[in-house]
Length: 254
Length: 203
Image (cartoon, rainbow over all chains, first blue to last red; front, side, top):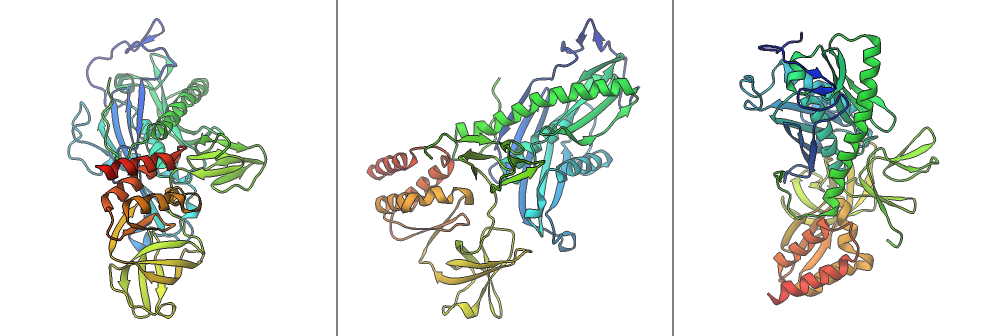
């Protein structure tokens, strides 16, 4: 059993249905709103199940401190932060901790591979991700939202990355684990894709999987990533279908 | 604008052949977009993006620092641009707005300016640099419309800084510019802006 689990393990997979009634290959409902922050160069807000995440992109701008800047490319930076009120468990004070440092690093590295940073020497591109409410799978939602924010900022990218996790629950592979499935499942594997050519930009695994399970999970994730890419594209398209002069945080109506 | 253009996203295929298209890249003999943009007739126009300085761009700039041999100026991009005192006969102070031409951009994006001219008393409107061609319009049509109906003098820099001067209705001109920025990708904009300006003037 994986870390962070408390209390009795519920039945996660029964009669082809998962704890929240989804099938193995079903995603939670995803809504993305692009361009929500007034002062950011690009921004996006995502509601992925119960996850609520805000992503903002600033830059390219002058790289500070100067000794970090490169004459060859822009430095990509990422700050993933969980709000202290974001989860059921205590997240304590906001600010960098072991978990958020790790996620900042992996998200940054995922985007370093798609951003064409050679166009902007001596600059930095900042990606800020604020988790307002978390329910498992925040890193995938964060990558998905940040990709939309980067595209909104007009930063040249080779692709619009998207991410999704797969898990093993009660011996079955399923896509997009929620909080219970994350805590009580046997394994959890977040993957970020470059959907154009199927390149993997982020790949982590918690728990154990056999080779066959891994292959099955990978295929499930890839299938789901195509759906996510569509939602991302729709969110960006909406900005131009319904042009607004002022940007503001729009609360998604049910 | 005659042919229907479609919106493309980063990583979307724009050509089956390795074509040299601005804002696109080539991978394995095919061409893909790098930005969110409008694609039509082998041309990709980005809908959003930072200003990328190029030689011969006319830019509106703000003097940010007076130095020994010239001026450091802010041209709405992350790089330092320099206007040498040799290039100019006027003297500027920090905060002055000028219009200038870019002479040279080197590989680490040091920018040299020339042909500077001080702008009259006015206000700055910042827009996204990719929308500037639309604000200028075909043969200055859009700027002419704004100028004639607001009485303002409008100087559009390629970098996304728009200087609005003169005794006209500044807030109306600003609203018109904001409107163009928000709807730059749509058609028939000149007419809509003209009718907006007309209705704004009667108020």
